[in-house]
Image (cartoon, rainbow, N blue to C red; front, side, top):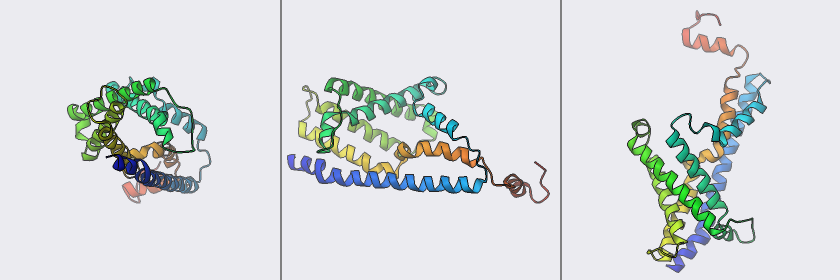
Length: 231
């Protein structure tokens, strides 16, 4: 078991981090290229970049908007993101995996609380997808599988640091590291890629409304034919 754990935390982790980084870079490059092309074709230099960047910040930290629509889902999603990101980035054991690279870490009790917040958020999100019809109707296998994988990974990571854990430590860590590696490897190929694409999508949406010259007339002709109404 120790040899398996060493492999998971060594060569396999290096491999999946490479997949994660290269995959997300590919997404970012293709998205930026599409944005540049869209802005060039728009023939309209008056794109409000400052407003778009401000809106990106508001939606990236939507504290004032959580109660406006689907509050249970919104708060659960916010807690999950905060808990997972902070506990993953600032746990001492995670930082040690990167060798000479180092940055400040949080004391274990704080990380445990963040993991519990993430676990509570994830289980709430899963329950929302199962029991709320609006969410269930738009959920597929991928949505459930990712949530379950995240729940298992976060849960095992929390248990690994507890003295009362009844599961053998090495087995707990094998499950935790395997789940974490699977999440990293799947990120560029699933909806988890929104961690990079989300801000670019908001900018793309703004640029999409800046049509090329005579673009409005072309849209009308496409929809209504050559005798379409004037706009």
